[in-house]
Length: 236
Image 1 (cartoon, helix red, strand yellow):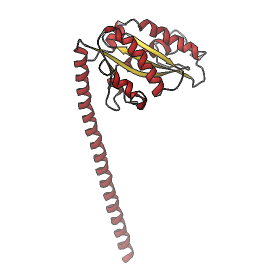
Image 2 (cartoon, one colour):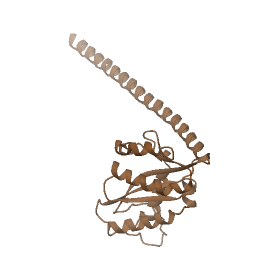
Image 3 (cartoon, one colour):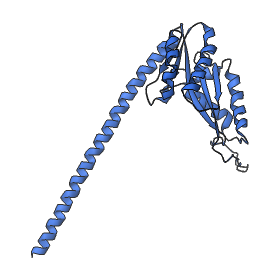
Image 4 (cartoon, helix red, strand yellow):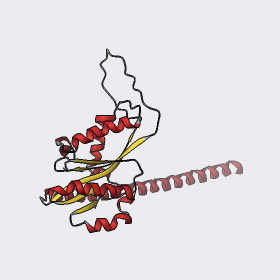
C-alpha cells in the first residue's frame, strides 16, 4: 500500500516543479518583451524628435542640409523578382561567383538632389572619410550657406584624427550625428536602394570595373541635381 502512495507523491512533486518552472518562464518572457516594448517606444519618441529637428533645419534658408553614408556594391549583383509573361520561358540570370565589391562614399543635398561621390579603393576608415569630407566641403561651399551633413555614428566619423578639422570649420561645415541604430532616418539610404534597383538588379557583371561603371554612370547623372533624388530624400 505504501508504494502507490510514494509514486503519487512523486508525481505531484513533479507537477508542482513543472508548474513553477512554467510560471518562471512566463514571468521572464513578460519581462523581456516588456523591456523591448519600452525600448521601442523610447526609440519612436527619439525618432520623432530628430525628424522634427531635421524639418526645422530644412526650413532654414541659411542652412544647406546634406546626407552622407558609405556603401558597397557586390560584383555578383543583386537579385529581385520580375514579371515574366506566361508564354515566355523563365529567364536564366548569370552572376559572377565572387565576393569582390567596390565601395563608395556618397552625399546628397536634400533641397535639389545634388549628389557627390568618391570611389574608395581602400578601407572605410578615418583617413578615407576625412578625404571625402574635404571633397564634400569644397563641393558644397559654393551655395554660400552653412552646410550641415547628416551622418550615422560609425566610429571613424568621430575619429580624433579629423576632430580638429571638424571643429575648425564647424561654423560653416558641420556634421549632425543621428541616434544609434536609426539608419531609416538617413535619407541617403534610399539613394543606395534606388541605385541597386536601377543598376545592379538582375544584371551580370563580368568584372569589378563593369559594376563600377554602371553605378558611376548613374551617379554622374545626379551630380548636377536630380528631382528624383529630391523627392526621394524629402523629410516628411
